[in-house]
Image (cartoon, rainbow, N blue to C red; front, side, top):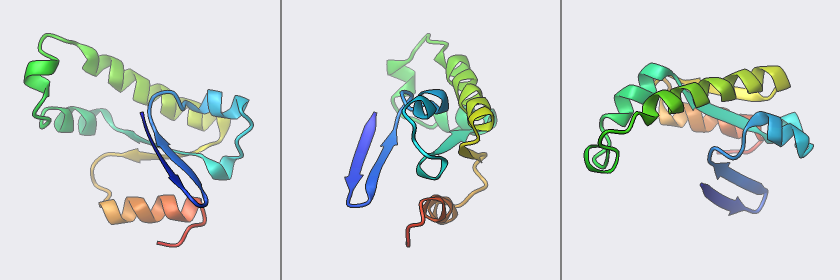
Length: 107
């Protein structure tokens, strides 16, 4: 889990920040956004990772990760939190711009 502090708040990455738990903390909708991959994006990028062949040999965690991403997307919809579904067609600059806009940041 990564956490980067900045003067205006905190940006985090990790599975612990699912929308239902964020709602329980009382975090306003304008202070949370989820970026989750499509199944196709996840599979295609997972195969490119150098560590996969020797660290995850024989593991079937990909299906778990795909289902988890789908659950986060579902929770975002149910709890009315912002969500970006990344299918790989969004350029990095555009993704940064969307997140900055959501948090009312300039980039």
